[in-house]
Image (cartoon, rainbow, N blue to C red; front, side):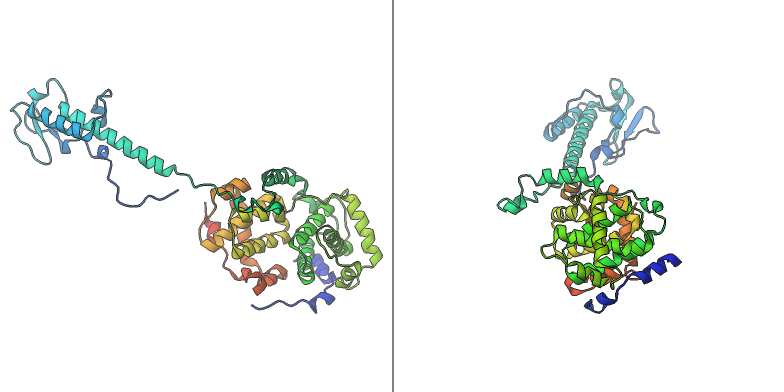
Length: 417
């Protein structure tokens, strides 16, 4: 941490929150025996040492010796035909064993290969073709896409009639919620490390006030959108964070913290008047546009697509909240952040790369598109709780949050191609 960030960290006023905040301790695989395709058996034709004698090993002939116009034969008819043709072979056949058939050269004047062998080979080729077709049909059996809204058809709050249209609109408008991933370069007095310190502290405040998840994600969104267009002095950055939380509470919460509460948690570094003035500046700068999708909106839908349980849900939110603190993660679309968090959480719990067609359908992201973001999330998981910014780790190390922070990170994703 550089000197300026260290100084800013000391400026963040914690006195009234630390005394109250307590953390509790705490490709489908085919199985079974499968017959080797008969047409794959070695079909080399070699010359015998004796005059005019052909050796045909295992009675199988090379594919390029088969007449292309032979009609495929049934097993029974091919066998009968083979016997008949064998009886018509001239008596000059000198010897026959299980490994080879010796035929006089005069018997081969009309055909390079005896006719019964050609018919038999045609039969074998057809059998092999049919087996290959069956195998391909097995591999083409697609995993079904689950109707995740079927269970909510009678629930009017689930709005199943237009839920897909709703999320299509969210996907279309998510770009308006995003900010340039390099916006901090235009700030003169603050940097990305100071932003991380602020958001880490706000996560602690959010937990202490027992606010809704939506409030936290909207708070961070408002901060980034404001800082992307408005220069802010270092000493007023905490004021921006407090005011953003006040606005998010007014938008999301039923019971809103009063201004005096927010002044108190910042150790009265700012007055009530300053908070209200910053609120006015912020809503005007953002043109009163607070109705934008956040990662939380997408997360709820994607968890439903993953048919999640409580364990997967808590781990997904733990990974996503770690990403909120990191300025680097701003380069990813909001929906991709949510999808990657669910994917990473699934991989963490199962120990393998797990991403169903149902998840792919509802997120519009396949594993390849998620992998870069997922690797960064794994790194955040590995380093959680090791530095000075530990609010997310402490929060998710409690029984209330299922000790999600204590789970081993899916490090194998970092080695995946």
